[in-house]
Structure formats: C-alpha cells, structure tokens
Image (cartoon, rainbow over all chains, first blue to last red):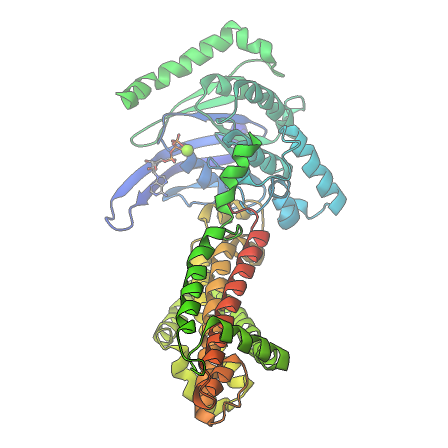
Length: 273
Length: 269
Ligand SMILES: Nc1ncnc2c1ncn2[C@@H]1O[C@H](COP(=O)(O)OP(=O)(O)OP(=O)(O)O)[C@@H](O)[C@H]1O
Ligand SMILES: [Mg+2]
C-alpha cells in the first residue's frame, strides 16, 4: 500500500499492438506490462532490440495510447503529452532549421517550461546547458553540421534545459565516446538529484543497451524480453548513493552486472544466431 | 582540411557559381548568325546581331523598353504576391487540416489543368484589358505551384518533430508557426520559384493576347510591345530584342530566388 501511494507512474496491464496499415497484420510490441515507478526513482530499462522499450517510453510520454491497460501519473490516467514529462528521443528529433542554442532553447521560448522565466533567465539557462554537454564553440552550428554524438548531446541538453519533473530518455548516451559518456552519467545523476533527499529528486526512466551504465545509474533495472515485449525481471540496485567511479570496481557492481547479463544472454545470443 | 571542405561545399550552392564554359555555345551561335547576316543584301529586314543591338539601344534610349519592362514587372510582382499569399495560406490549411483538404481538393484539382491563358476571356470580360486582368491571370498562374508545394511540404513534416514540440508543452497554433511552417519552408520556396517562373511566362502571353484583342496593343508591357512589332511595324529586330529581354529577366529572377533560398534556408546541406 505504501508503495502505491508513492508511485509517480503506474503502468497497469499495458499492452500495445500495432496494426500494419495495408495488410492489417497485428504486431504485439508490448504485452501486459505492469510496473510502478516511485517518485524520485531512477529506473533503467534494458532488453534486446525490438522488445518494446521505446514503445513503453512513448506511451508514458503520452504520444501513443496503450491498446489495453492504463498508465497513471500521480494517480491520473495519462491522456496526452505534457511538459511535465520531458522526452529525449532515440533519434533525437532536433529541429534542422535551428542552431544548437536555439534547439536547446526551443521549449523555453515556445512551450510551458519557459513561461515563468524572463528572456535573460532563458538565455542563462541555454548557456549553462551548452556548457553542461560540452558544446561550447558549436552553439551556432546547425544539426547537419554536427557529429552523431554532438547531436545526441544537443537533444540531452534540450531535455534538461526544460527542467521536466519526469525525465524520459531513450538511449541518451549511446552515441558518445567512453569518456564523455562517463562524465555525462555523473552529471545526469547530479541533475536528477542524487545528493538531495528522495522527495526532491526527479523521476527518471532511462533506456540503455549498456548493462554497466544501467547498474551505475539505476535504483532499479527493468529487464525486458521479446516476442512479445514483456517485463522479464526487476532488479533492485542496492549500491550506496551518491555513487562515484569507485563503485564500478566493487564486487557488488560486478555481481549485479553479471546477473543482468545472465537474464538477457539467451535472447541476445538468439538474436545474433 | 578546410580546402576539401570548401570543395565539397561548392556544388551544394547550385547556380551560385558562374561557369564560363556555358558561354561557348551562345557566342558561337552569335558569330554564325552575324556571318550569315553579312551575306544578305543591305536593305534586308532579317534580324542580325548588329541590328538587334542597334534596336536595343534605340529602344532603351527612347525609354520605351524600360517603361514596358517596368509595367510587366509591376504586374508580375502584384500577381505573384497575390498568388503567394493565397497559395501559402490555403496550402497550409489544406496540409495541416484533413477536413479542409477533403473539401477543397476536388475544386482545386479540377481547376489545376485549366491553363492561365484559358481564363483570359473571363479576366478580360470582368476586368477589361488593363492591369487588373493581367494581375489576376498572373495570380492564377502562380497560385497552383505555390499551393501544391505548400500542401506537400506541410503534410510531409516529420511527425517526430511535432511530437517533440508537444512534449515541451507547445500549443497547437505555435506548433504550426514554429515547427510545421519552417519544416515546410524548402518546399514552399520551391513552389515560389516555380510560381514566379510561370508568372513571368503568363504575363507575356497575357499581354500579347490582350494586345490582339483590343486591336491596339494598348495594355502596355513588354508582351504588348512585342505585339506591336509583330502586327504593325513588322520589326523582327524589335521582336528579337523583346525575346532576349524576356529570357534574360527570367534568368535573373531565377537567380534572385536561388540566392534568397540560400540566405533564408542556411540549414539546408
Ligand atoms: N509505429 C509502429 N508501427 C508498427 N510497429 C511498430 C511501431 N513502433 C514499433 N513497432 C514494433 O514494435 C516492436 C518494438 O519496437 P520498439 O521501437 O519499442 O523497440 P525497442 O526495444 O525500442 O528497440 P531498440 O532497442 O532497437 O530501440 C518492434 O517489433 C517494432 O517493429
Ligand atoms: Mg528503441
């Protein structure tokens, strides 16, 4: 009962079936997912390609309606997108006609996140987020002039600049080099509120293919499986917070990573074969 | 490294660079033409480059050509502006709202194959042989390429971009202005360029036709000037001057649009 009261997001028997337009052939992308995500929790979703991770995220965002079941936020059913739930898309969805800085400022200038801010405050926020994702010097470039990793960082900066209460991130660091990735993992934990009491933390859902990244970041890891997309296992990551690079060398970190790897190994091997 | 970057960027700026090799053939033709004209008797009315140039200078000095050109250009600009405003407005509404498209598509598709010249009789009956008739024909001609390309651009906007804006709490009207319109801009610019080129074609044809209708070519403009040369003074040199001016102006307008496109859409690769 306690847990349900604290749930920020509740997925109840959520199923998503896509119907192909011409053949009318149904594809079950997500089947019977039931999951409570607590306020202030950092949840990572891992699973093989095509198991429905992005579909789950899009439904939580309110961009797709479940075919069956309901998703609640703060005990109210989600019926459409809202700026409270910010999304970073797997393919970034940057506006090609805007420069890096204008992409980062798009929500602040045009959407609800900037309503209470002055032009000067918006400018400061944009500047701070350019620095955060280390894109100083490229702020006046257009997306087509950037590398894949740079584009990904613009998308992350745009999400974080909007300051949403719930962060929905679809493989947000997947295209980055190892060093930038580690730096941004720590920054992400800081922005999420790792050093604050749980009540002040944001709620984060983070999709990744990198098991160690999931273990480093998460309070809980959701392991999904394919055909159809289901929740295969839920793992509590009982590593102490705040976490630093040292935690990666601990025995517990290794055990948890190994456990997740065991859970998805069979399917991963199947996918390669 | 920057040298290869510059080389790679060069072909992207289509039409911006002038290639002197393009002049070889026209120059050769001019020389052949002049040599042929030299073999003719001295009082022959056949046009030659030398006589065309002389006629051109005379027409410029008398002010006839500049004023005719100004009149035609003025009509094209007025007509194009009308076609632009209506084409883009209706195009955005049709592209963004399915019911609007359903209602308007049959009417528009049935008018589209009707050539601008085919509405000339109605235009003359309604507006007479002056500027309003010419402007309405130009507007009609420019409307369709603008409309079709705007509808295409708006209805093909990446859905993900609209979704991204919705997750940032951007209102529907603002999404139209800040996402849909900029995303459709390359298509709209293409429509504008095509619209302008048919507008210029239409104005000459309209002025020519109005000239023949009113019997005196009193509609003014460069098309009407051509009609006078053809029907009254039978001056082939004058007609050739007009043809060349019409062609050069069309080329300049196209270059202007390409330059505007490069400036307005710096984000296109
Ligand atoms: N719009 C759609 N129409 C039809 N089928 C879809 C659609 N979106 C997703 N699917 C199908 O749903 C399944 C899950 O897709 P989803 O994108 O959620 O996978 P994923 O876990 O995010 O994969 P990846 O790790 O490769 O990003 C796939 O089989 C996919 O083909
Ligand atoms: Mg995905």
